[in-house]
Structures are given as structure tokens and as C-alpha cells.
Amino acid sequence: MSKNSENKIWHETTAEEFNELLERLKAKHAAIADSYEYPFEDLLEYLEKTGTTACKSMRAENSDQNLHFLLHFASPAETWQNLCGIEGHYLVDPLTFRARLFELDSRN
Image (cartoon, rainbow, N blue to C red; front, side):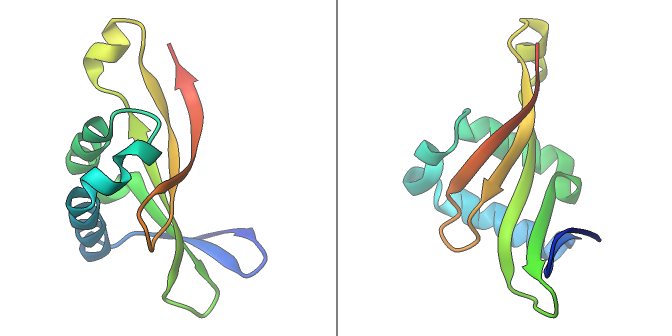
């Protein structure tokens, strides 16, 4: 756990939380895909491959309610080979599962 701001803490996501999040993202695909800057299918595939290491959740201290999910994303290997790969993080609303922000970490 690391503290990012007063009274809010990033937590590692448990396997159960991660699987529930992944299933909800898949179920809401049509309604939320437009909020993701890069292909939503690539994100789902990446999350399935990497598992819980690609996800954290922010909670208020002394609470088990998620305020945000932080999803790590790297585009598929062929995009890097074609010099158009990207890597970054999505900030996701835990109620709607829509992306609120994409922060680009690297691009080739």
C-alpha cells in the first residue's frame, strides 16, 4: 500500500476483485468502450494476460469502497514492432466502469 494523498490509499487488487472487475468491463463493453482512448479489446486482452498486477484500487482510509481503479495498459507486441506501441494507465470509475483519464507513460 502507498499513500498518494491524505486519506486515500492505493491497494493491490485481490484476484477476486480483479476477476469481478474484468467481468464487469466485458459485460459493459458496448456502453463504455467509447470512453477508452485506445482499443478496448486490446485492454481486455492485456488484463486477461497480466492479471492482478495490472490493477490497483484507491480507497479512503478505513473503507472497503473503491474510489477509482487504476489499470495499467500496454498495446500488443505487434504495435511495438511497427513503432506505434503505447503504454500507460487508465483511471476508471468504479460505478460506471468508464475511463476518466488515460495517462501515457511511453510511446515508440
